Image (cartoon, rainbow, N blue to C red; front, side, top):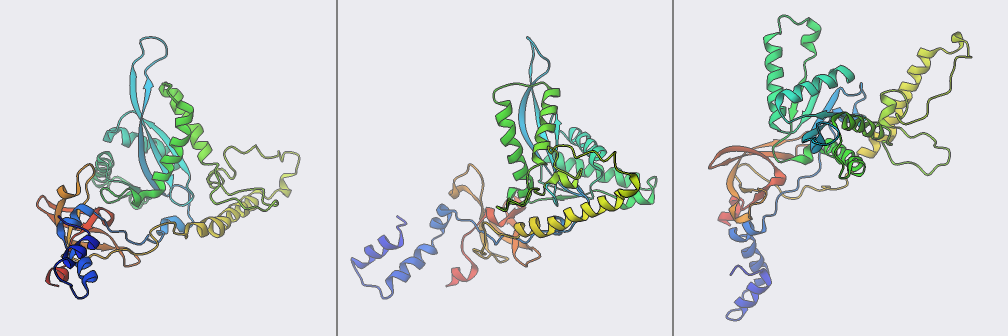
Length: 364
């Protein structure tokens, strides 16, 4: 009945005394395919190194992560007879400085996302690259933007041709590949749940609320505050947007000082460099610490038999497949694999794959 190693060894010893029986029992249980399927333990590769978009200084919102959250229920108008409608929150986050931009979206269609992206570009500038998951609206918008750029490539100027937006899609069922925007959604929801509660706002009211939450998130410190009494100013995402925290008090007026003594451009340039130096020395150093996935647990090779972990499905009903291709990262550790199944080839992260038996274990 697929007993554990201890019970299996006890049952065998009732009739014979096996030499090295404990190791034999463990090896027998470990090679049992049914037990492995029921156990359903997936791989845990070591946490990868930070990409260049996270550590190289550049302009805010040049590399952007996008995610949707919701739905939020709003009313079409105030007073009696109002109808409940759904709206969603679209979060744009700068991968370098964690600056956040929130937009209210009426639905999850491709057209709604493209209009949201146009509003974002009009306020924050055109990003060079966008990172997002494999949502259908993201994929459709990326395809339409690419087709539009190809059709109108001749009519664009040379500069516009060089400044195309590049989409990067994370693997399916791999939210940990976009941890920075998932954490941004969690922080935004933290404030929204407490403010909205059970109320139903209008579209204008929820737009105002999103803007206020965005201001709060852009005023949070980027690194843990020190215990020094002389450290008055913490570096926030707002410093890279307007030179100070968005919720900070306005600075002292300098109208009484002669303009020739200000040398404003040099002062602003020095402040900007000071922010970037602090960002590199204080914030980036905090990012290098791994809080989990510190070791590379489990290895996978091409040709190994694996199970595809699926939500709301028992392990014995998971699809069986064979590893066709591995995708190693910059540190040579694979975290994504192509798997051949009876329904075709699918791409999954290793944290969604459960190894069954390696080839040498079958013959061993």
